[in-house]
Length: 253
Image (cartoon, rainbow, N blue to C red; front, side, top):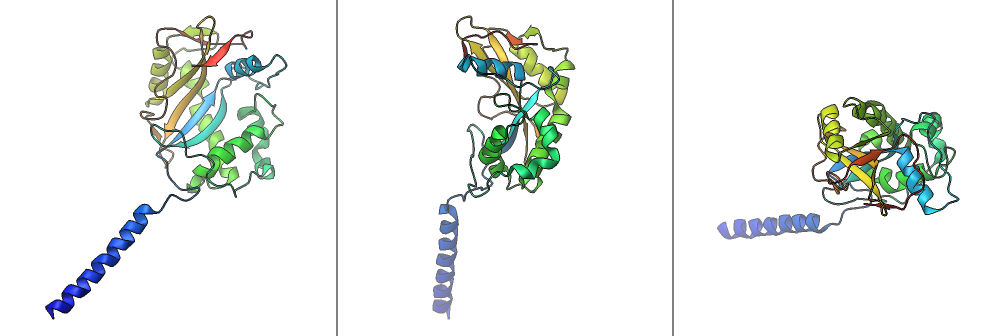
């Protein structure tokens, strides 16, 4: 009797072991929920335009109607200390028609500064690269829902308003710690600031601000994301340009 029980127990043990090992070794499937945080990235159009014009004298920019408006770059699922995942589902093709209900708002608030407000290129890129990964979350599991959520986040966390609460306004120069403190003071959570730099003069320009959310879209600290808290040179002040600066020799810091 004992021998039968021992054999039976051994068989069960090995079956369970095989199940566990198989599960452990199974690679993540495309579009898997393999990320820790959602990064909501807004960029400053005047600086984006500066960087774009730096690439070619023939480049033009398309700016929002309100020149003090921050615009959306994207909503990026990310792992801590890494970039990505990216391009999770190649079968989920971008469909411009799906965005018709919100197209007017996207053309003003999620504008393609390089290609113009009538272009779909930025939206297509953001959906293919980031949206297909975020789509594992029910709140953003369709193209329309993903872009609507981006617009909703901008409405609630517009950096124009967040920075203005600390009297940080376009057309001025600030220490990077002032910018980081303003984000934390305005939101109660720590964000991240990205700069670009004039390689000749060493001047830094505010380029993007990133804030972070958990998978329930609750605001959290950005500690641990790639590039946190900033790539800006803390020994130099940061220019928050009110207008598109004249062409400079610009590089990502």
